Length: 93
Image (cartoon, rainbow, N blue to C red; front, side, top):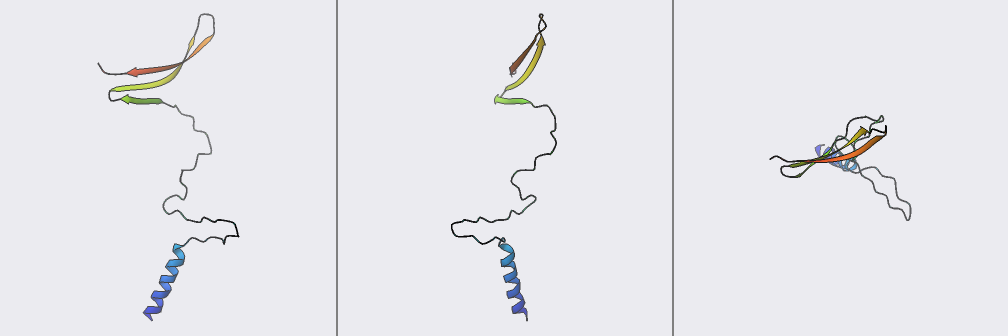
C-alpha cells in the first residue's frame, strides 16, 4: 500500500516541478519557465503616477573629495534670467 502511494507522490512532484508549456510548432522554439520567490518579475513594477521629488546628483570622486551638481537661476539687471549648471567639489583642509 505504501509503495504505490510513494510512486504516485513522486510522479506528482515531477509534474509540479515542470512548468506547463504549450507544444512547439515546427520551426518554433518555446522557452518556458517559472520564477519562484516574492515577485515573478525581474524589475519592480513602475508606479502609475509620477512621484515628483528632488533629484540629487552627487558622488565621492576619491576618498575625501565630494562633488555635486545643481542648477541655479539668477535675475540679471536687464530683467532676463540666467540659468546655470553648477558643479562643486568639496574637500576637507
